[in-house]
Length: 266
Image (tube, rainbow, N blue to C red; front, side, top):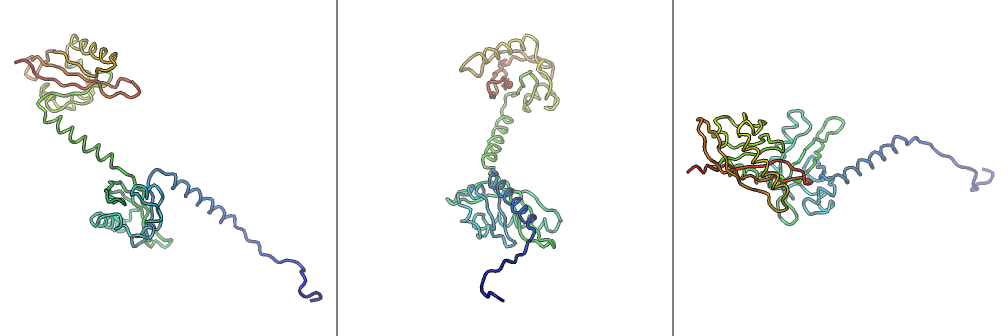
């Protein structure tokens, strides 16, 4: 050591970190996709505690993500839904499947309930050991409300004593209720796809088309009525009042009509 303590050079170790950088870049891409997704995404450990939650998932319940990380799912789910989710995970582990879907209610910060469709997948260690779950959550509250409304309308349509139908823009049946099918003496599915000309006379079709043109040219009218004679299943003819309404249009495009037939013979 001729000049002890004096700087005489450097020594270094070079390590190839290309793979590490590629993994970091891939992780950044995945994080961006997860955060930009409109769906909620979360992960749970094997004990059911949140280890990750994106902003969309936390937002469904009115939380910030870090408010729920570390919390057990029972903080935002009732006992029944926790049990259903646990049963699904046990079933996946027994069956060898990796994912499945179920509907769950999440409890918001304000105590409200949000109906969700949750796609649950298993997380496993390299040796196959169960490490927890990943979930993709979608708020289907509005969809459930629409389904319930649809069920109510379907019930009203079927219990009505009147004959109801719907036609597409070309005049083909897209829907008939049971009463309409009975009037014609056939099964409902026999009429679906058939043109209205198989049921109505040409003169009545022309009157119906004239009414539709009138409704389409009007700024405020969406329905109208005309009378016609229809043949029944036993071959007789009855006079009916046909109340016709335009189906909701998209971008002003005619999508068809709905109608109600009412026997006014008496």
